[in-house]
Amino acid sequence: KKQQKHVILLWLAGGASQLETWDPKPGRATGGPYRAIETAVPGVHISELLPKMAQRMQHTCLIRSLSTGIADHGGGAALMERGRRDEPNLPYPDLGAILARELGRADSQVPDYVSMYTSTEGRRKGTSGFLGARYAPMFLDKELMPANIRRLESISELDHQQRAELRQLLGSRFAQGRDSHSVDSHNGAYKRVQGLMASEKLFDLEQEPQKYRDAYGPTQFAEQVLVARRLIEAGVPFVKVARAWWDSHGQNFETHLELVTELDHVMSTLIDDLEARGLLERTLIITLGEFGRTPNINPSLGRDHFARAWSASLTGCGIRGGAVWGKTDEDGQHVVDGEVGAGELFATIFEALGIEHHKEYYVGSRPIPLVNPGIHPIHDVLG
Image 1: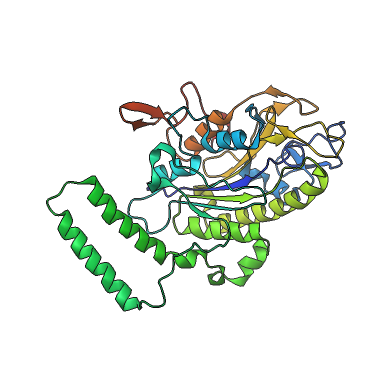
Image 2: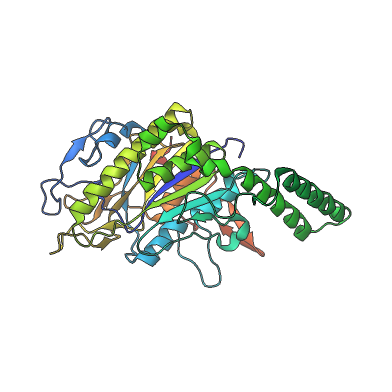
């Protein structure tokens, strides 16, 4: 917490194609129409749809050997959000909730976990599982500004301040001589709400200089990522920005031309912005979805769900830039080297942030490690 590390998760909702992003297979029957291009790291090639990211590959690590086995949207997303499957009667917290607890500060006046998502097909709000509501996300799906965060116009600033002071006086008097978690939680909740109200301007892009708004671009995804940068700069530990809808069963190549081009621009702008502000070494950027897409191209010129051999990327904090972990065969059908699952990816993320992956929480008297026993991080990609 003292190191003030942060995470921005760019969630590629619906499942982006690894072949049109991080693991192209040009010239193969599975490769599709797009070429592979050289990057700033000798020997590393990515899709030609990512020319700006190719110039910044020295900051990014590619994981090309994810094999997770769950190829339906609900199950795949739950696995990749939490790093493991739920147990009966034990809902696990997602990555955002864990990092809110590990990286958040009790006295912080900003939210610990913000999730932004707009989709034509459902909304995944995130879950804090057994960690409880304290670490649940602030979820925004319609507007950049959280609902009910502003002071009512019918209440003056002086009135608002004096009401808060009176409530604080009564609350502190009541707490004297009482050793009660409920009382402490009640008083703490009011302090958090006051802090959240004070953070209203973080969500207001009118406060951002026009040159940065122009740099990111006018799309909704671009604006959400710019808000994410504003939030982590103010101390928010974890922000998830979900871009939908990558589920390209038909017209895969047109869909990825649009979405990957946008991702390339926005992600490269974010990297440059964070680096210029001295924040990239303390901020981890993750691109991830629930699975990848089939190497085989279907009759609708689409790619279907595929969880056997797919990719993710890690950029910035604690990561060895330019590294590539794992390899798929020449058609992208199977992992041939360095196979990893969701657990290994999560363990790597935790270690990159300075969090021991074998740390345990307790549910009652039962110890619950951050990742399942026997799971280890990918040490070769850690900086």
